[in-house]
Amino acid sequence: MSKWVTLSLIILCVSMSCKTKDRDSGFTGDRQSEDFVRVSGADLIKPDGSKLFIRGTNLGNWLNPEGYMFGFRKTNSPGRINQMFCELVGPELAADFWRRFKENYVTRKDIEFIASTGANTIRLPFHYKLFTDEDYMGLTSNQDGFRLIDSAVSWCSDNDIYLILDMHDAPGGQTGDNIDDSYGYPWLFESLESQELFCEIWTKIADHYKNEPVILGYDLINEPIAPYFENKDSLNSLLEPLYKKVINSIRKVDKNHIVMLGGAQWNGNFKPFKDASFDKQMMYTCHRYGGEPTKEAIRAFISFRDSVNLPMYMGEIGHNKDEWQATFCKTMEDANIGYTFWPYKKKDSSSFVGITAPDEWQSVIDFSEAPRTIYKELREARPNQALAKKALDGFIDACRFENCIVQDSYIRSLGLTVK
Image (cartoon, rainbow, N blue to C red; front, top):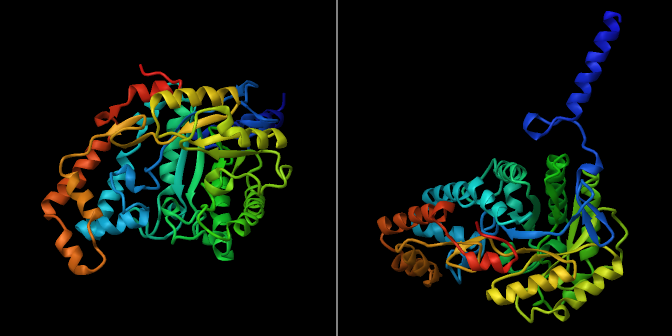
């Protein structure tokens, strides 16, 4: 064999090796479609050909804070929580709290624990601002969305858990309530600028993760269009066109990952959807809280799923008694609707693990609930600074997995196990 033939074979082998590198060694090529979970009729199929029935939880509050998970009621959106912390201890200490919160609220230990229960999927809610230079969770530039989600991807990959990326807070607001950190109206549907940013961020995310098979799919917007608005029917008519627009942007860089479409009015109304054929890797996602845990309660979801012959997945459900949850899990399994319960972690209970906040935390709750409309009210409501700082430090310590209380019966009610 000549030296030129030998050299050519070496170059070919190196080239093939580069095409098969994994994430840890710097994957540079394009993975094949068979490496990803795919849609087959109403089922999800794993790369090995077996069916995937989603069972898992949501990492709520980590990258999109919600007031009630801290014990707040009036102060309920990410922006309002940050404003309250700044009024409590100043912007510098508030930013420091957020930086430590992001590093401690969810860690590798949390993902390992979730995997130990037998869960196979995690839904990760995030705020669009994590991919901009807007003021968010302690940073005003060089946001760390990719760094944080990269960590979650690595932990999930190491523990054989699929990850769903959920844009919980979209530019302009897609819901019009506290859960999307908006200004009380779903401006996303009427703002071309917000829509362009929405598509731009999803395209950036899809390009970054296009070769990552541990990501099951992209949940494009959470619970669009609250039911409060008189013009909700008009807004509903804009939902499917917006989905088509963002999916077309995503497919320019990523043709493999599943895209998930939530229904209008809290992911509960699928009547606005008229075209189920515009993407091959597409499915729908519903949400439900309360009501009877029977098949009749989700009859509309099942009927729609059957009419389009595409998978339906319960992205959020929970906050109920263990008996109710166990019954509903059986109902969803019989109906072939996978589920991720909400949430994984929060203050007190009704979650996989509960946070026992320090005694000083009550001073923060009291401040969050006090009138703070004018500066005089703010000054009168602000607690002693040493107490407030101790409360913030204590909450960071309390939220670490090793200091949380495992809610055994809650986990077992979901058909999972506690070792």
